[in-house]
Image 1: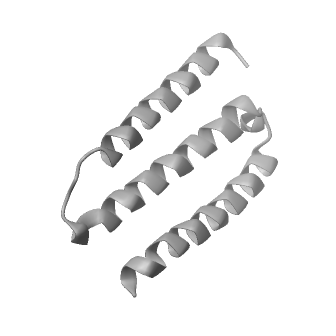
Image 2 (image 1 turned 30 degrees about the vertical axis):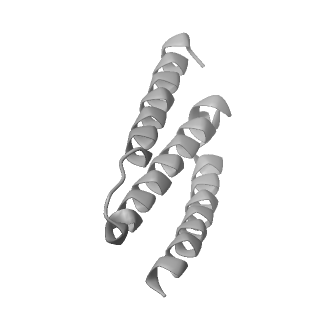
Length: 89
């Protein structure tokens, strides 16, 4: 991994962390909280993809990266569904 790629990954992680923190700050109407929750989950999923691809070196192994991304997407979808169940019912 080159220093430039590592810096870009680190900068992206910092940006996504700041974005998720800013989304969690405002107090909004109770009916709209689910939208912010979904946005925070999506940002966490993007951060996990960056960590897997850049820091674990899966960018160089497309087959393994695809497998990890599919399992990560399934896991994040499950977590999102568990988050939304109490809000829906």
